[in-house]
Image (cartoon, rainbow, N blue to C red; front, side, top):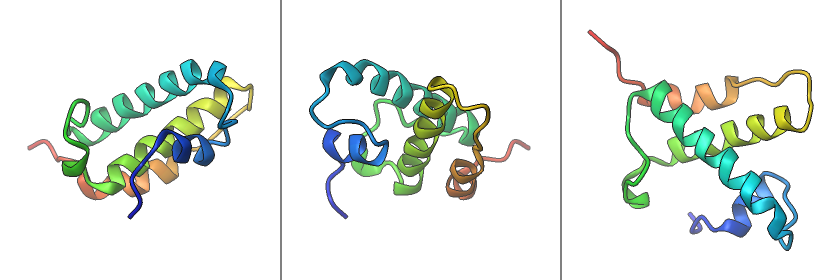
Length: 95
């Protein structure tokens, strides 16, 4: 698996690679994605060593960030189903 870089994230979310003005928006979308994944799964990933975070959870962050960004851009609706699907196996159940 290739190393996750800012350029790959920008490409995945369809940001202009050379547009530094979008970095604040990207940062906000990724922070929202991390918070959502943590709340949805009950697992802390912020500040964790990236090598220890399961790839599906990182994928969930990117999928959520993409949905967050589409809503910010004025789309009427978007689905979190893809993010939920990749994160479901890592949800902690409360007993």
